[in-house]
Length: 273
Image 1 (cartoon, rainbow, N blue to C red):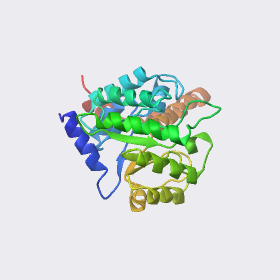
Image 2: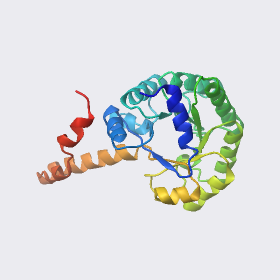
Image 3: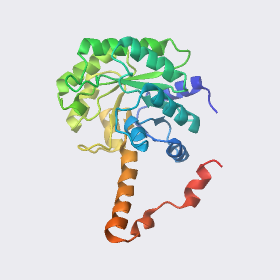
Image 4: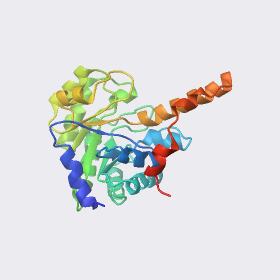
């Protein structure tokens, strides 16, 4: 098993490759082990996926719950793991910094801080304050004894603010604040993604699996994207299959869904006794 320092070095190196890599998002220990078995090179948590697995809505998990989930994913794999740390679970720069320190203690080698305030009346922090929060998180990450990749997220597009110019200004400010990776979830077009990549000089993460533009690994690599996550898409895909099966039973009294079920012989060897 690699040390946390070795995982941190490996995770940073992935972002320095010529081509993009896919970092899928397991929502529990079982899916983390399956993704590891399938040969992915790193994993990331999904706050929405984990919340759904608990029968909760997104953005309802506290810091302790989030870090316990992250710790479980770290323990389930030998791969580098990065975590969705939401907005750092507090408005202040100090809260963001403390979250990074606590996240590092779980074995994570990366994590994201977003500029969403959780205030429905003002969902995005003012730029200066948002940059201060990223700067504090970066300072906490740099104080660690191993590489920890700090991702800064600009959340405009997820909160009804599809403003590419403001999003780029934010990502550039977060770059100046020291972020290692930049991420604007919800970019709707290839042109927007290309604009972001051209406007910054840090690795860019793009999420696939949302509504809107669907580009392949090769497409995104050719644009200059370095990392591709899928957020809650894997969890929602599994829930979609579950709901279709349940509705078939309820509405038709049939069980054809089982034809697509995975065999225990395929998954059991991946899991522990």
